[in-house]
Image 1 (cartoon, rainbow, N blue to C red):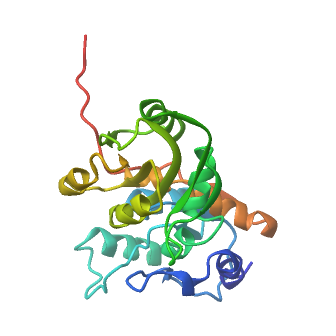
Image 2 (image 1 turned 90 degrees about the vertical axis):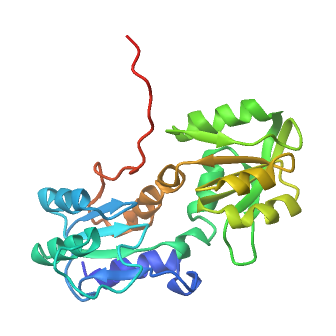
Length: 257
């Protein structure tokens, strides 16, 4: 199957025109006219993921996060990105990414995250399509909801603020770094807002206004791999979800004897 046919299937769901201006979705490495026989699906493109593609015989990697955000001035192995590019070219592996265009569509990152958490009657949070907001089928306590998020998403860690109300029913969320949309979630009446990468003063400003719940960035978006798999299923091309794709964040836990 030609790579451009695979790209057309992805972009029929998540058109590149929907990406944010600063983003770099699309081809990262390779030629859209080449034949593809099997695909490795990942959140991030790392040396370990490319090595896995080589061992697995995959000639295409599809990622959520683009490998390249800034232009490479040299490809001499001096950065992790340059080493990945070198390895991919050497082993004839193409790389394609769908990032904020996958975030900003119904059926994309945020609405699928809402579905995983059992949120119903959801809609996009912002005019640009980023985020989602909806309702829990039944109200629940804030701490019970936090436990639900932790368990369903299998969080490595979870940070949160004191909410405005101790009962949660309206929930907003944004996979990845979505702290800039906290005011939007408050304005739309969300009781809780789930996102990643929040800073100290963002917690401080949200305290008592909304239940801000901060989780690992990778955890919040790793289901992109399942979305890609579902999109490509009608094509019949073999797709493998990467086993080497993982969060770079390690959480200290004291070892008790």
